[in-house]
Structure formats: structure tokens, C-alpha cells
Image (cartoon, rainbow, N blue to C red):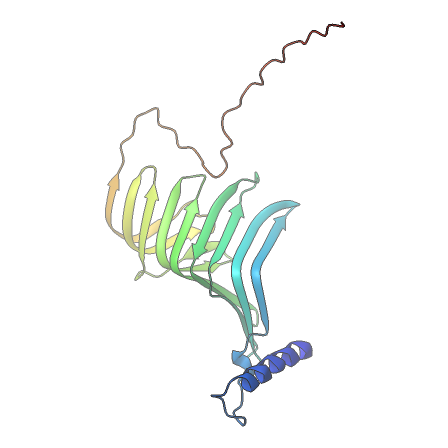
Length: 215
């Protein structure tokens, strides 16, 4: 912690010395200075040796409030989470313009803000909203009933307010729907998982025997 504080003080001192608009006697609030900055962040989480989750962000800034023991990581330039199922297939992708992860003592909260997109590739389902919360302990994603939500799927379209789902978006539901339509498809229709689809199995062409002639 001492090293982090020293780094933050050094950064703050550099800001003061490089800006003509800040008085020399002005005090910098160290709680508003990021203690850690990471560019092009890439992190993975494994489960029993298999890939469970992948996180990507162009920028991560970590802040620490020493008076309240509150810390949070801010992702101001885009945030993506990729979740994999038990078979190792990419099942869910969540994207947002901004994300924040707050930790206070033994509590934590994840929130995604701005152009939030939740895709379940296995089901072919896509959700659009502006705010999304993730309760990691309960394995749920949700928002409030004043948040507009749009749901697209091979079966149709639905719009309403409020979203509740498991964290993999396997059973997403809109709490207050007000507009929807169904798509009637041919009985032979089959949805193709484009994220994990590798194409049909092609049989290798037989190798013709080569005749070598000695001259």
C-alpha cells in the first residue's frame, strides 16, 4: 500500500509541476488519483483447468479511498466479458461503453453503463439496454424496471422495462414487456451458433498414387 501511495503522490506532483493553472499550495486529493493504470487489459479465469471467463478492456484505472476502505476499478474506454460453458464453448458476451467494479469490505458490485449488449451465442439471443448489474455471488445479471430492454432471438422480438437473468443469459426475461412479435419459421429451420461453428465436416480428397518412372 505504501508503494502505491508513493506512486500516486509522484503522479500528483508531476501534474502540479506541469500545469500553470494549479497553484503551488493547492492540495491534490490522492483519493481521486488512480493508484494503478493498465492499458490493453486482458485477463482470464479458469475452472478445473478449463477456460471459464475472459475479460478485455482498453483502459483500467484503479482508485482507492483510504478513509472508507472503498476501492473501485473503472473501465472508461469499453469493457468486454466472454463467458464459456462447461464444454468449453463461447456462450455469452457482454459489452458496454463504461464499467465499474466497486469493493467495500466484503461487498462488491459490478455495473456496466452505456450501449450494453448481452449476447448468448448458443441460443442466438441478443439483449440491448443502457445499464446492467452483475451479482457474482448469486450468478445473476439484472437492471431496474425503469431501464428499457430489447430482446432479439430466433423466435422473435420483445421490448420492455427491467431485466432479470442468470449470468450466462440462458433464461433472460423482461419484467415489464409492452411490445413483442413472433417469427414463424419453416419447420426445417435450424439456428447455427456462429461463434462456435467451424463448418461441415469435409472428407479429405483421396491422394492419387504417384507413379515414379526411372529414366
